[in-house]
Image 1 (tube, helix red, strand yellow):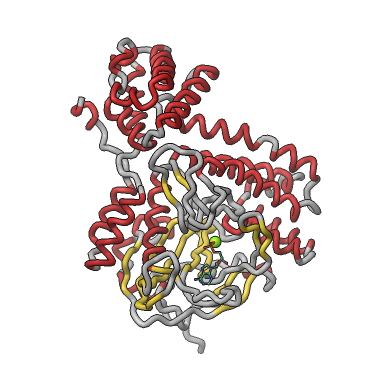
Image 2 (image 1 turned 180 degrees about the vertical axis):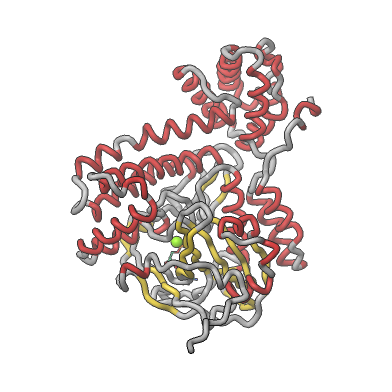
Length: 487
Ligand code: AMP
Ligand code: MG
């Protein structure tokens, strides 16, 4: 008599993994082994994600996390994904997962398929001389970015766990030796624009067809029965990416490395390296020291997203008529502006304004911020904290302390802002106060915050400031009704 396999006690190992990508055959990945690490300290577990995986946080121990996401021996198969990409405009056919792999794919409680992917889990055929590792600081930074973006309404990957692994790493951009870690990321998909680019480079039209069918079936399900689903997929991707760019811009976020291998086919934001939230409002702000021409500057992100979407037309050309894709791409700007202005108007306290007034208020806000080189987040936070219904009749009381920084632009903005308030019925002004509070965070992940948290870790192994910051970033807004009392 055959006996049942022993039940896995670790709920993370017992997740119902689905071989979605594996079902496509062996053209998309290399099976790889994980590194073995000398130590395992669980530094972060994202309990907020466990319900999505049908797991009760209380039923998953720290030891379960370490066993599943730190000791990889006996698990797998693990897939280092194959992809190419345009890096800073240059085609690179030597990419692929160089320090991570697809750990597994699992269906969430919401019915969607999710990837668990590692970062820092060892070398692969794509490591190109790299050590296959993730610095602890890099891991800490990625945890913080994803949690901050999520709370600001940006479609983003998340971090499921971060384990310190006890190795000494050498890096040019961190004081070295520096500490090591391995991270597990939860994302909608690790299929990138560059996954298609590689297939085109290899002349594999058959695989482009197969992969696109897979992408539509898994991530664009409502399109499956549409006759022109390929073209509709591209159109929806354009829309999703335009919305993502708008989400970054409104959040004041600079991704910093928008190569096509870092662009997800689902339109989700992921892979946070040298990113930064802007401090002063400056479209030219560039986060990566290795981006001297500002290709991926804060203000260039919408354009670069469009450029990347255009590059994706090349591998898709055999499946979708070029004119159709160009027509879809032609709508990028409109998709972007719609999403960006909706978010920015909300940051100004409005849900809907007459179109030309909305445009003028937004343009004058940005003109002021830029002329004043104003601190972006502080401006909106102060607007939110100081807002008073009387502003609709008393222009002088609107943020007087912000006036000297760029007086002409300030006065223009103030006039238009007041005009916008005056279009609202008096009862609506309370809703403005609430909207301001809900869209303007009081905890913002500026670089000094990250450095402070890191200093506590690196100097005293004190993780309290990091964990506190994560918690605050997960709910970064002032509590309801606090502004009332401040006024
Ligand atoms: P990224 O800039 O993080 O998107 O990485 C670009 C490429 O470099 C990807 O193929 C990575 O897997 C690879 N890579 C980055 N850092 C390392 C490393 N330390 N060891 C091996 N490969 C790496
Ligand atoms: Mg990457």
